[in-house]
Picture: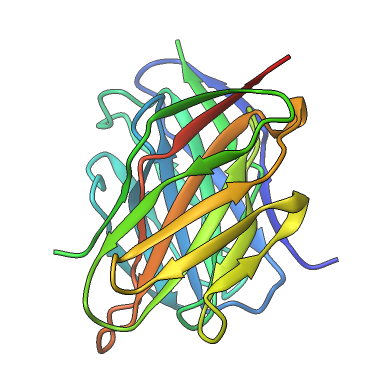
Length: 111
Length: 115
């Protein structure tokens, strides 16, 4: 079945450590997105990529980095510069201007 | 600026009652509209979408929505809700303006279905 896979589902890290969240899709979609979700704040766009080897900052990119070396993969690194990294992270992909397809999310907790 | 507004942050309703979740968008350009549902600790799942054609769109789980261009609205409705419909609902719009295909999201509506 085609879809988006995010891993891991739950992630715990110590403060000051970088951590990378995985996102893989086999839908052959050109565009991929990372969102951050906090209670009551909806979906906030961190980064997005419309083609391989190209990506743009979203609304809250500070403290995050991404790469897009393959069409299928769009990993997100949460760096130590991110002041409040504990959140639910969602990856999505889409093609054209149509609907986005989402992964199951990664809940990151920094202690 | 393009935006999507969900008019209610929380909607409590009793089981088997009808429900309407309201969504307005602001743009005069061609628009695609979507409703998604999110259950706790899960990703978002598409309920329905409007691309063109009939303004009444039917989706999964018995939901439907009506596109109203004059009122720039896309309200989600269900005639009789179940406990299992308790979830967060998001409205989104894709504005087709040149190369800008950014997906704009509402802040979500929390639907609580009570027995």
